[in-house]
Amino acid sequence: MHEMSLAEGIVQLLEEHAHTQQFRRVKQIWLQVGELAGVEPEALTFCLDVVLRGSLAEGAQVHLLREPGRGWCLACSQEVAIHARFDACPSCGRHQVQVTGGEELRVAELEVE
Image (cartoon, rainbow, N blue to C red; front, side):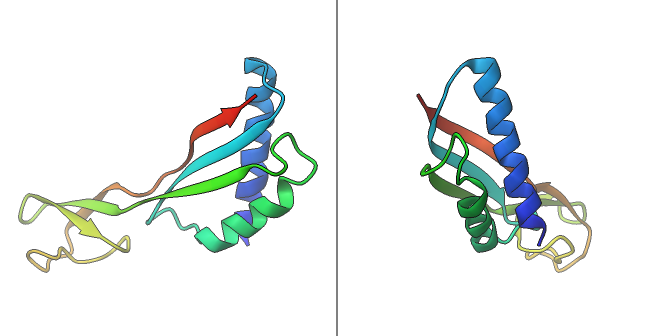
């Protein structure tokens, strides 16, 4: 389950920023999770519950902001919604879609003290 290593990386990122920006506690975390990021949201939430214990973010509320998958169809020159990396264009049915969004996993916002 790679979500555990992602959760551990998030805690490490929080600790690094706590040191440089001088905060001591994280109260809320907003994570932007793209539909095409290859992350299972429920698994990530579970893993964060585990790794946040004993950290500066113990007890923090975690909010997942889901970002839809987006692509640019080279055949019909339209931006389209996609739900998997190799989806066909929903407009023309061709498989010439380049992913333009929905791949990200990032800490979008923190509430700290």
